[in-house]
Image (cartoon, rainbow, N blue to C red; front, side, top):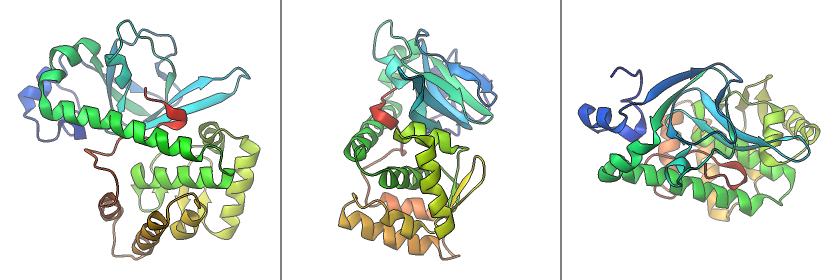
Length: 273
């Protein structure tokens, strides 16, 4: 079986090639253009899988017709992981490509026939789910905080865990999508981010965002513990020195975080899909 990029996914690192081939037997490597669907709400959840490249948002439409983004998954992250847990389950959200993206769709029955008997891969799979739960708890904690704190928390999280290169968020995301993620009006998000641009905290184009002053942006997240803020301070100073790479930053930050194998994705509005 020839599937580009599959063996380099974090879930399969260190796993012999023959074992990976057995785990993904019958899988389909799907390619999607920006705005196209990986799956739709109500569709039978007969597969789960991993983002190979690009990113996907899990979203639904509320009673007012507005988009609500539940999660954004990037390379190496699992999507539709709850599809393996429930008999005759249907997807509760839409999954939409953000930019050109690729996804490894693995048949649901593979999980029960092969994954549950592979300790290392199963442990990593469970860590993906655990990390999603941790993130949903973090977002629940700040959901009633001021909008500036919620947006700053989201941008810092995206920069820490979905980063393309130092300071640049590794995903194409609009202000409308940020608003749909944090549960706010797009006009309010534009007002907040425009202020940060004038202050020199961020720089943004239509779909890309660069954090210019991470330390000052982290200070907007006043709900974080004093120890977390002091750690953010150390990281921000390291980041702003030319000798430290973004990968080094993420490794240093991981020392004071919950154990991870690897870091799973974000999950807005307590989504576990």
